[in-house]
Length: 339
Image 1 (cartoon, rainbow, N blue to C red):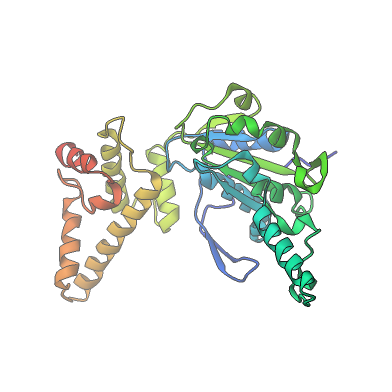
Image 2: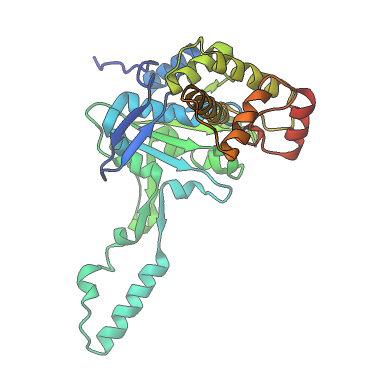
């Protein structure tokens, strides 16, 4: 009987560093999923053939879940088995499968024909075979995930990020490839479908900018990621900065952060957890700088004092370091009026 894969919240309770295949250091940050999200991922691992469609407001952790799952399964080998397809407004379904560079091949054909007519020796022809169509095909992330050899019995992970950015017919154009793990490349002269050689778990994210087709939705598992509550925010920030939940600065910062979010009108983009982490990083730095220099009886520079003074705004009607959390003029005005 095949061993059932499971996902837990234990993998990324602290920041992880490792070197990728090029020797470059990679950092994977803390990721703390809710129990309900863990259940959704485990259902996806069980069903295998059904992608997991994640929705939720921007910055709630949809994209990072795929990264967390890839690390959970593959650890330091995740760079070989995690594929990310970033969707844009001009993205076509075919882009995930392949792109054929017909112009490059035509250029080579003309170049070689010209040199043959002039009895010239073309050294480049020894390197390029114009008859080999594969040399002119660039495979997309979908096919790369399908064909990358597995890490033992562990599936590859493919993230299709922000699918709602593409045209409305994009999801339906991917139905066969996603459901059956098959694809066709007519330029290779073979109209038959090619099947994936590796198992792939597909995670798809959407910010709900467009409604997705019913036929596509029917083939997915679905989960909506709610914004973290106070306790989860404390755990996220606490683990990210390796501080205890009782930390007074963190408690006050999260309290003010939640007030800002509550006062935002529906049409405004609310600050997310990623912005909270950036904001608290600044609060913590200048608070530590103040305490350090005070304990050593050192004077702050004029520039440092100006920034440290902003700490006194925490809990008042003005927001310290507001430019980190607020991204529009309306948000600035709204926060300063009602915070």
